[in-house]
Image (cartoon, rainbow, N blue to C red; front, top):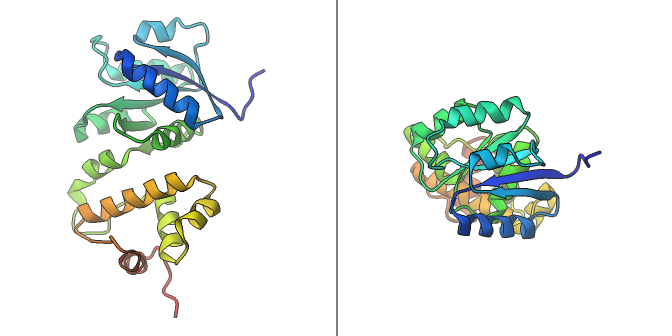
Length: 217
């Protein structure tokens, strides 16, 4: 019987060096994720003795001419959650992939903590998009407040409310590094939307204006 608190993961990437680095990264960054397969081709994944797994981290740019929609529907049918990785990202490609059933989308330059977060989210059936892609997808929304995820809103509320990063991390049950990554993403989203929240005071002011934090005397 499998342990429900553990996540079985397979990684598919045709760059062997990156595959090795990713495997190492994830093993060191997350004790709850079991790396059961690291393969370079789609057929290798499907014929792996431990397939199906909980989550597959799949390179979008595998040079095999198999449509990504077909891969996603195959994985969905077998009950596997998919997080896609790519070196580049056209917003249209991202939208299509998410519409086809991918639960997450990451740029390969993401930090290990973000990759781990995406895998955990996918195992719970929740979606996760990397900050860079989120900005690309929401680039058309300039002028208003940027779209923040529920967790980003929590980070902004706690940090804007005066808590140090360490406390924010503790309150949300995440590492200090992850809390810092969230803050970086929040600031970047606001920057793209035309607002500078570089200082804690500016961030607090913005959080109140956008209804994330209640005005207190």
